[in-house]
Length: 143
Image (cartoon, rainbow, N blue to C red; front, top):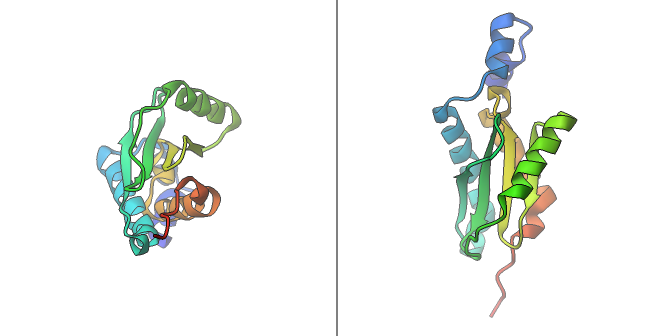
């Protein structure tokens, strides 16, 4: 958290430019891996595997990931929803949004600026996904 804060929140031009710059492909990959790693312990006790998969976004300046588990097969979804949500988020100044696209599929879209794709932001994203949207993931029935 301290390293992320120093890299993105200092009152110097270089830090502010870095914070607003698009994340590199490597930084986006690290964010995705960190998010999956943080979510994994909440699904493993039920014998499930969680996946965080990159998802193309039809709006510039955003990255998105689909969070799914082994309990539900992934299905195609209308990209209009993602496009409209990202455009609305742009208009409202949002930096992250969650789209509950049905049982077992949670899409998270994040503004592509490094300050929103740091390892500590991955931790916050995982917590928000579990706390605010955990109902998306169906419970295994006890048999």
